[in-house]
Length: 288
Image (tube, rainbow, N blue to C red):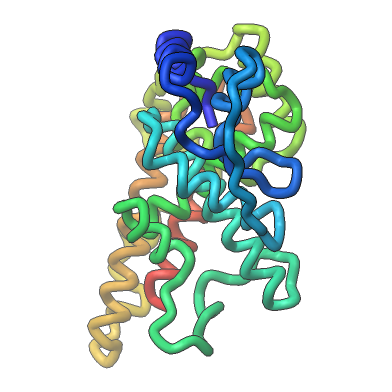
């Protein structure tokens, strides 16, 4: 969790000095899972405190408990909320995978089919945090990118979460499947202060879309063509709705590619492509 600002920490310190440490510090073995600030203040001023022990099966279980407990207490920024919700999701999926004998994340679609009325992880956490399941899955990709940046530079991670540098959440989401080299490049730019959010620019020439990558040209076709499986009268309405949804997603992707400048790095292009694929995967999850 982000550190308390000086004013908030000072108020907490003043309260504990005057009234004692009224809330117990929660520990898991010799690890503090709730009450790090209280422990620091009590240690500095030689103030007695009580502890409560909790048992967790794994680090992920402890992490889930910490996030669930702390998020409701803190006034978090949108990027911080995304990071912690996404971290909760990723930890939860790992726990599910471990308990099922598979250390890899289970597929969201059908992973709990054997449990009556079971909710998917994203649906369950969406209810807990009062957001959509799709938002939770997007948060997971944001958290994955920020965690990867943190492995390279803790300072760059801190700067993102503190708001010292503004990085678009959609861009972070798209980088979730980027190479280590791309992540390292971004982390380095953030840390040395050379990262800038660049404005997008239209690149399609007046004569057509020949300046776009082939993948962008292809993505335009499903929504523009009059054929496809939806043109057959025997196809169900559901299939026609699916074709329409895919066409809409593809059009959105094509519009995005129009806005990217020719100077856009391959990392950003791969990010856009990954976002397009992720959106298709979200559509797949919704119909499972």
